[in-house]
Length: 330
Image (cartoon, rainbow, N blue to C red; front, side):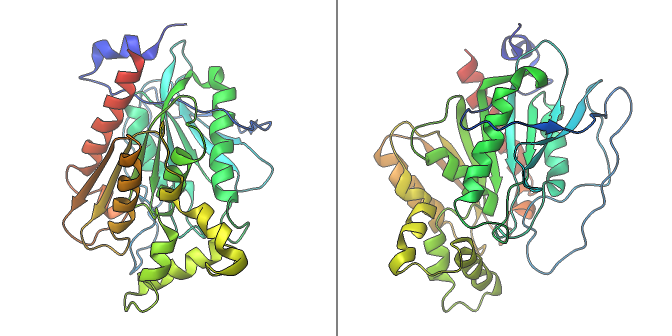
């Protein structure tokens, strides 16, 4: 089977490269009938969600569908029995082994949906990646670590059935937004490094729930107070004391940093409610064990989707992803 990285590198000016998947528990999976959205046709437009006064948890789908490569398919795959354990797979049914990008939506751990990542999924599919846009159990469905477990489960399923989606299971990245950034970085630092994981990207990631808890105690910012309450809910409704201390320790991404973790790119706004202090803690811990971390700070208050849509941010993220996947493919 030909390598997509080898073939695709010849046309890098026209298409970027992508990542692959990991292997853990790998449950059985089920799929919906694939939807063909390439071949001169455009995908169905998805409605833009109604505006809210607080920052969007994840990128909003556009009503304009960009053209995709001929024959691009989208399947909805069940990687577990719960209704939230689903992911949309965007792929080309050819003989190439393409890198993969896993996308993890935000939403305070208690809301949000993969449908809000449709345009981001499309943008990576246009670049030649296999895209896995995942849902996971929310904090109202199950407390921590169910969300991290689900992210592992989605990756494991993608890796196990890689051939079906022309996917290279040894070359992928995970990109998470806000609460999804917490899950992405948690996957990147949990125990030993996942096979094939080449990098992790966090857009406004809530890397330290303890920091969110502390910053939200006396804050006048309603988003900081909501984030504090959301972290408590994620922990099963208890605060970080006594019997709950172990759960909160498990949620703290910086405390799990170790040599061999995946390199990371993290983006914050200078004055957003998820402060850059989250990422500074992780960078300090990872640098102590020799893991490269890049933290970018944009001026303003934009969080998650609005931050990603600032001029140059998405392009910078895509360039970083491409560099990680091209290097690993050589």
